[in-house]
Length: 392
Image 1 (tube, helix red, strand yellow):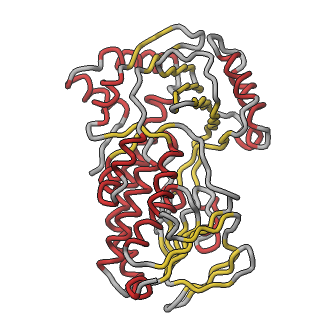
Image 2: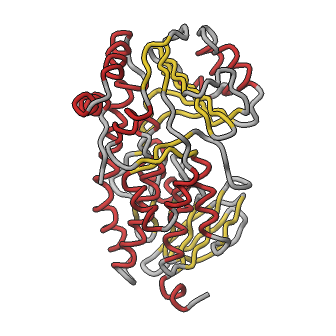
């Protein structure tokens, strides 16, 4: 290990998702000695595609991973908007989707981003899977951490990148209930090998308070179920497939076939759609990044971009304040917080305008906007309707 790395400091990153891996890459390249711990037994895959853009796109270019992301991107497909009986209501062309973003945007499977970050680390950063933190104590000079395997270590900086249910946040800042706001909606995402309605387009079926989307992910497919819950706690206590079946089994089109397909899927993501709202993201030598700090919720479609952008800026600011970690963390938050808060607001607008319209009239209004979108004027109107903003 070089003298430069020893001088920059020693950092623990809790979480090996996109936020944790991008932070590890940026700090490692800035001369830090980095240890990553991840409670999952191995690296994860799956999920759906994401629109990677804005601060994340710019950061990926600076970090040298943009060419790999470009290689991994999926072709944009037209979206066929269906009613609950499977009737076609509108076609949202791929070109119009791109125009709506108003900036360079990549259409990338979530799992590919993590794989690219792992490849970029090239084994130079140690990642301990099946491990998390049990306790954190700190003073002005060091943070002492006890890991779940019983090992006690000392670090100059501890970074919680462990998602919306962050253990680091709970240990240092307080109970999750103090910071988490649920929309009252549930999200289930399956990855399947076969799509009974694969016609070369993406399908999005909407009803009041519920939505289903089927998308291609290279050689596999994602099937996404989203719905308002009248009993969030009860639904979460129920297994994912039972909850999905109860809410969607009455629908027509190919929904029965899709339900049969996802019933045998090997894995699924299932959880509430939430935001994390905090007055500060750091305390002493401990800082939160990604969803642990500012989870915007599914409706923004910007989580991975914010994670990579936040990691890159954190590395920059630490370099601007050598030897003064607390000053660096304050400066980083002052610069990045307005970006994250603007995306949180965008998610709240997007929930009812696009993802879960509250009435049949709202669904019809959305269809009208999608049908007329296509030129500069109507695309700007659609951005306003959906609350789309492009932070720079």
